[in-house]
Image (cartoon, rainbow, N blue to C red; front, top):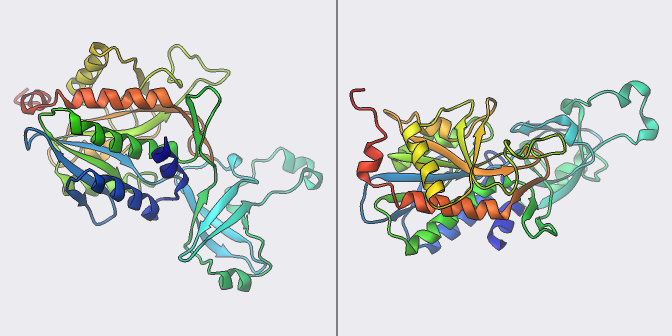
Length: 355
């Protein structure tokens, strides 16, 4: 899990994915395959199997939810705006890292002690626009002398840890460093597997602010079929129903519906059939809110059959998240088995010719 730990503990909010891109490039170049990029920062390696076509896209996304500094108060406090979706209630008193051009600074999102709260404030959800980050500065001049500027990105802080069940992974940014890790691991496993296609594996940028990298990536890699590798929402809390809702340890997620895409059903069915043939447990996700990069991939040119394969995650879009190591391993195994089947005639069967 060292690579996943490195990916999660590195910082990369939308538009500032440089640390993650360096790790991705290092790992992709180690595979000895050509590296493809676009001009917004997405990166992929091209692994040829026994045929140039079909071209299969495997894409995580590098960015995590975070913030940007928007104003420096005269007393040295930093105001910020979210990059990606946040619920303000999870922010108060949390540690963050401000990434400047030369160094990193630790800050705390400020909060009032309960001793000072009025009865009205105790029952109020504190608005994010009134929150600030405290870096221990005494003035705006001191902040600027340190090199902190408006526009600097802000990263949540959460160390990587495998919990005592030896399966639950706790970390920040598993949405979506899981997808980056899965793309890299599938690429590594394809070294020893025959596949009748060419695979482009890597990650996009700026997914959390509107699937922006996914809009340009298809023009760089020209896929015939696409997988978005991303996390889904676990619903296995104390009030959840483990049996029929996504949960940790239940196997990979296959998304049948989200707010941005209804997948090609023939492609979807092939993945389901492969899981059943290989006795890989899987879970079905239907989510009417939110979406993934597949929402853009499937609209490229005349259309690209696309599917989301991932794992269930708890507490995403906060400082912390949890996934199952077993789910990750099974998702990678499922993807490798599906790639062994995706030859030209199979992918052609997904298309609608004169129907």
